[in-house]
Image (cartoon, rainbow, N blue to C red; front, side, top):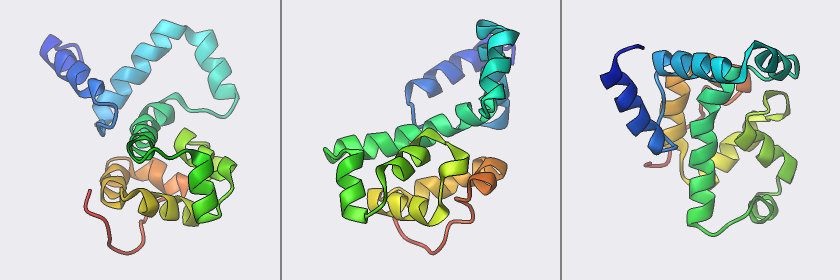
Length: 145
């Protein structure tokens, strides 16, 4: 992605933290982050089980969850008490800690926030990561966001 117009369009898209990125956009951002951090830092991050492109992809999902929580004036603790899901499980969903995510908790959380339709779109755009995280396929049909 060397086209200045495409880079400008991506910059506009990134201003809205909940934008679902294309594969090309994820690749471009991942490459730029690697260049900015240097190969040693990127290797350290990935040696701790974090794949940089996964983090880039997951950032919009995290932002969408945070946005809905904040809009309602809720904390993870509030939602944890309402849904009877441990806070660390909700935090894992937002942070994209794949080994800690339990799909049934994730689906209940997305349903509670009313973002199921948006998450389905995100999962289609990020099918491989959604599958590895256990949040795809998304059960049932509900929600309108």
